[in-house]
Image 1 (tube, one colour):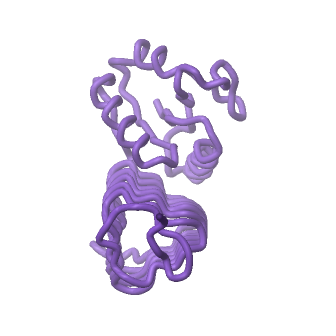
Image 2: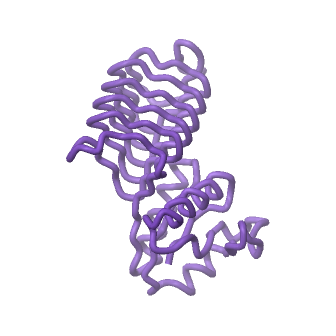
Length: 217
């Protein structure tokens, strides 16, 4: 059973990604359900024919079901909470990574390390010696250079460009079109605004905006 946690825009994009993989024979089946919070107005509706169900009902019905879970929400903090809830409320859950067929990357052994539950979307390029942490999201048309590391539970919005040697800590959120220059490191749980350019290491968590990116007061 394949289940997407989330029912918003990114969840629908992940459903498309999985449909493409299924059509190419890289997945055994498509999406069986979208799972949303109990108070979501979309409960009982469907996404292109796939039902949207409430979390509490899903966990009650599928405690012992063997399933693959995909955490398709943008917030790093919400991803972490969903991961913990799945581990405690489901007895037989796996978290496979998803990589769209259009993603360009170094295919040599050991050149790319993609963690459990990571999602790499269409049009992205990973060059060589890149590490993508568990449950990281790399959205549409991103580029990630050599020796870069994207931390667990990070979210990169569309069109982010990460230069070589960059390291993003755990749970960072990066807005659309942001750019990271070579070899900068970014503290855990940092937010980078859309269109920002990170030119230096950020040792303090917070929200950074502008060119060059500066801590917003």
